[in-house]
Image (cartoon, rainbow, N blue to C red; front, side, top):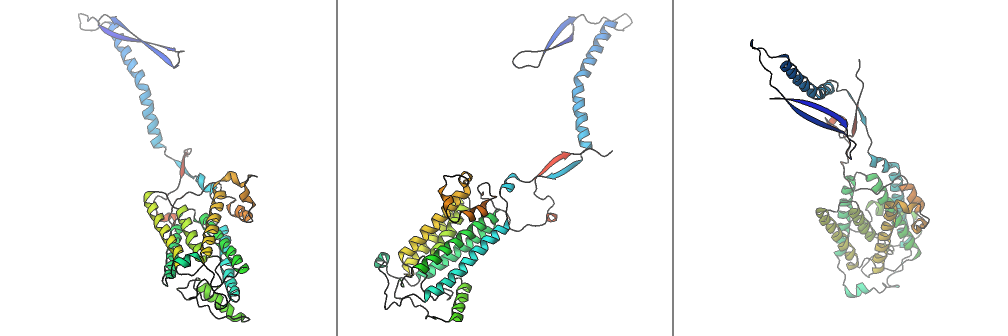
Length: 379
């Protein structure tokens, strides 16, 4: 018996929708052959129906193959560069970084000028001996300790500089660092001017006072700037810049930036621990060398860390910037903050990139984001 298929299509109003296909199989008698060996017309019609049914089933496959061939034949595309969404929210604005750099440089130079002014007011240690300090009472002075402080400080600054060069958003991070550094040294300039402390230890030999010699004072300013204000370079021979400690400022600030703008993975945590150790040892060695009073170090750490946390709290929380209940916006530097951070709409991610931008011709496939849009084929 031969089987012929009858297809009945109708809409299905069930929960899944679509079409319902009913297949009915009917048994038909086999085609009988004539005495001459030919089949009867009924058998020919049945086989013809089966061929038509198979051709109907193969039509979708032929259409798919034809569509694929047409796509391969007409592969004309237009490449349209699509900017990254995060890039528009984190513009570089290097000119603002330049303004922050000028702010930091201006305050550093002005601080050296103030040191030369304050140096003339430091009382002689024979008249005003060092003030009592609890740390000095229990820890004797180590002559080599201050060299350790300055070496640790140079290592931290070098590590931070290399890390900053490889940051993707180095312009934003750089202006934050320069603004905070300049502000901290401006605070230091004010505190050392309004209160002049006697030398913290009898071992300190201060350079002779120049009084009205403006030319000699200018030479000292240039010598202090050229030597980076370090004792190991022989550029820092003046006294009076005690409240508060500039070395503690740099040791603390560089560590906080290294920690903030680096990943939190296990390998990087080891790097953070090393930097923290360099910073902590450097700060302790300031006191071990009896180069600053304990209050100088405590005030320097407190002001540096609070200013860093306040600034980044406002920078990383957009809701605080326009909130009337944000008391951090009442700080005097809030206007400078809004100038520097006006177009930074999101927290700065910790991503790295190569610091040098090579031309696109150096690479066969430059790393860019494209959207593929098919163009109309030229006739």
